[in-house]
Image (cartoon, rainbow, N blue to C red; front, side):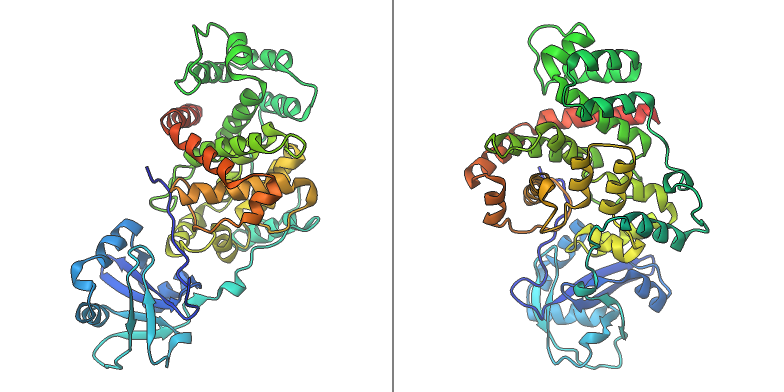
Length: 445
């Protein structure tokens, strides 16, 4: 079952390829042409046309461009002549354009006929990929970047600690205790069980997990002690409790990109696959498996923070991500908001005193050369993300996995393939677990 929104590299094999995009609004459709790997600047489209044009859903675009009538040259010519055209100014004067549509794979050559009868506009509607580089982490720079981004859209002038000024909620006492246990290498189930017992909501969730089909516990689970000690174990309860706690602090936004994978589904799949991969790494090189799971569970947490801080702009961000499915979402976020989910997620989790490995891995998950001490955590996040996208289980562009990534982690291609097959075999159980997490969030709202 494919869940994610993926798009191939529109410029693969041809640096001069031109992306063909179908837009629509209540007034009708329009076609946009721009360099294949560039970002479509919707704001400039809206200013140019005076219309709130949006990209067509991926599945609708696939159906439209897969019509039999568009698979031959006469039909392609009729298409290009029948709708208003908006063409990036860098393409003006090009004798022939090699057009590609992402979702259907339709590709054909087209020459602008220069007819005065067809409404065509050449304008600045694209941002080249070279100008979309995601910010690298720098000591003390993320907080300043977040502040500037918020000030760009609000009247705030930061005078207090950033987290106080932005109205971000504090962590509950139970969550703070669990973080302390997670960070204490000597902590065990004897320390955890009393914390769980004191929180009725967490107790109910732990019992629900313990009796879920995914864990298939033998015999009846009759107590919190039984659930933690016999069925779930210390690491799992701590990590799932933290993930739930984070989700209860910030709600999943309603206006996500259309067709995207549900937030908790993506989080659970990433955490589970990352843990499976970590357990296959040779013991002498293996990172802390519990922190790997937590990194996967919270790898997209900054997305919830963006939705909280930039509520009026979040709908616009979602439209931009829809319009540019071939780009990493963090590149689009940097263009639209001047800050990314990785920056703001890593910063906030660090301010909440989550383990340093988790914060750094989330902040650096897009980097090719992360800090040495967190390289295994970052590598596992990168590998997990690419594997899930390739299987249609996560959002974002699909990238090839370099063999060097396997080597850096100490994994073989066969081990990785085995982990993916194990994950796919557990889809029903993981979906049930996801429903449990989502339900607990709804009950807390």
